[in-house]
Image 1 (cartoon, one colour):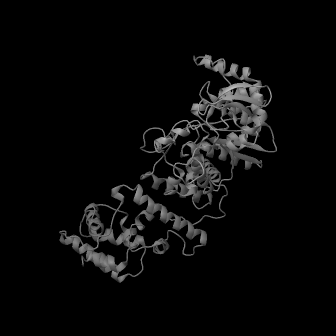
Image 2: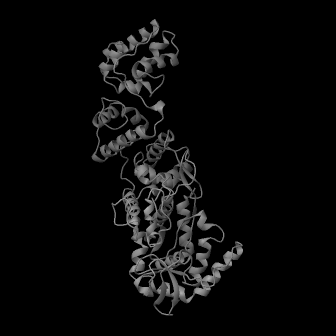
Length: 526
């Protein structure tokens, strides 16, 4: 089965021709936090570019920050007095939190730092700088020259949607007042470089030169202009932009008829959410999960894997609860299959999983680094007597990781230890959490259960070294020979150690504790 990114790459080469360089694009207005749903557009562009590179093609991935868009509304998490900055460019609105040069930079800086942790190379471009430097000046003037043609295209789609046509005085541009920087009214264009304006905010009137960058194309014209300017071959989009008559449809006609470039190929991507979370995420509303939040419990490789394995038209629901343990298991299995340490169910599954893994990685590791089982780490990080080195020692003793570890192995294990700790603190259900009891609980023990506990204690005293399987057999046999049902027996043991009816897998859990402590507790010594 061909991976969807490979399918798209083949289609791009076939339809756009064999080019010296292919351009893929993603972009967003930094008017709020860039969340895991927004990231899907970025990753879809990236992975298609990855598939093109795997075919020996040179690829440029542009991520356009639309930081020259207007500040349209004051989000809930921003002081209400920020209303005074409405209609300014978001790049010129002060940062309410005081840690960056502007409102837009506050969100852009965080996302760029998050992306750097994924090891993905991308050109971050800024609409603000492109307009202010005059790079778009020729295209702005061209749009004014072809105003009637652009308006006719937009009106045609308005008519299909049974919406009123644009006003007669509609212009394909908006103007930022050179003085107060808020949106000004368009008065006239001289047919060359000068545009006359009137500002309703500060009362100024005058002319501004298009090359100075105060005249900006409106969104439905700006997007197709950008496709032509950067020779974009592929850009994914959400279903709102790809609905019939929406911005992609109008942009397709505008870019071809006005700017003389074929519209880029596209893919519709679905929403991304968190299992159990209701409603659509919104960066301006603040009800968002960021990549930074995922980094608290997920390795970068697993985050890439989540997005790589799902077809863009399928909704992604990330489970940060118990399902996260399954996700780690799945990723580790795919990694072992890729490196030939485990077999897939069939050749087709193996091929698909290996390719998904390749596309998840900017660079595939030369070897499989140590895989500390996340499920077991969830148990070990709750052991008060174990620090990071102690946890690694237990993993080695129980055969989960090799005896000899390189620097990269240790780094990855320690990362997983920190992520497991975070998961226990933030997302683990209560029945997964536990604390070792400092002293034995005051509970009545039936004679046969007491005898079974003493038998296990004596075995441990005689055996300084043992495997988890050997301990597991001793625990089961001690109860079986006395006719104690397993569920009753395990319930008692869990209560003796953690004061709960159930807990982590018992034999690995006990094997990771200090042997003398386990012996003493089984004997119910204080």
